[in-house]
Length: 606
Image (cartoon, rainbow, N blue to C red):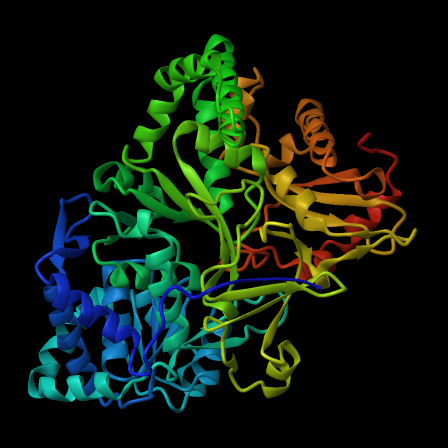
């Protein structure tokens, strides 16, 4: 059994908590900015010093106490990613309570389950619409005392109510919170079945944050370190980065609540590092390709992309890029790369990517452009990162070595097991399921993986998603899906073939990218339903399938596809809030389509 371990760089005292990360920052560099925020949409970014933020956290925490929140109480936050989310998170911790994140897109049934299972007593929502969702299920939530609305002045109301509570009360609650206490319950987004409540302790976060500051110091602890959060703070990935920024001696954090405003926000805020999921980088690449248009400009873009990838690959060789390649790279930088970097703010040098495989092509492309993407791997149960590539220890195509303080191993069946102080303590109210995945100090991730001789990890799929064809071939669908989804026309892919004679796939089109793709290929405007049957579109998808198949054997390759006229989205229930496809639901609802795919005579040659 292959096993690798990375020693912890920082030990966490028993008295440490997430709150001590903030108080340490305020004491160490209280007059320096820790957050920048906008008071109005499109307005200037206003610095918030560490001391001012800590004071505001205490003021809101006093308000929570005035509202009857006691140590250990559960307080839910249902909002987009904004300054008040971080403020409330730290205020709830300061009050000795447990914040429960809820995706702002959650349905009434999901809200009811999370609030009831975690026994929430107070909810802070962003809008009146969110409040109405809670109200629709409130009669089935007997423990819920109150609902506050951010857009209706919830923060100011809490601060006003807290004026009657002594600050010493908050100091005492902070001091009483230790590393082994429950910090949060994060409900997994539920790709299968009801969301599970993952119990994470203060140790889980503090261990990762302090080791992250040390291990990723040249990214998150430089004098000019800045990041813009736009992923949901209800997800563990963004939550971890938020805590890392507070733990850093220098990092400044900002929030972008509207994905449509992300590019302008990047331009004005100018982050130096960013966290994102692979789909974001795929969109950036595809948008840049489309913006190049047709003809000579498109050929220049493709030439520059090839130069970027070749240049990045050369960086991994002892000899490095040749003189000729350096000259080509300099030309490509002036023609293409500088514009792309400017669109991302101009100062961005590193990004941390997780949630799904990025792919070597995109990894090398962006490094060649000047943005090094550090691909990592983690789960809610591991408080985010378990492995991550480091600036000086980068292997594109892997998710890196074990994070400091982490041990990893792969069992004979190929399943990845993880051990470390970042591993959760159990599933809320589910002792049997907890015992199933936590065994002998190891967490069974359910992911299939391999570890190379240098200790670098590759994730090859989910154990429960393995497809077994009628011929007995085991196929992990993730690699094929990720490669095919990189095409600008493709939005989502679900590989099928369990107990079937060969592998097939359901493909949805990206409605945002479709118009530009049609234009650059000299085709008339058409809707998704028409495009799904267009011969030129189908031929392009056939070629994309052929390229995707290059990564697997003939027996594992996609032979037929079916292009759907409906995309998989969170709104129609086929995507989780973290943008994972609900595979089981797709297979159930599109069973007739899958049957037709295998009955069809139309195939993709691989």
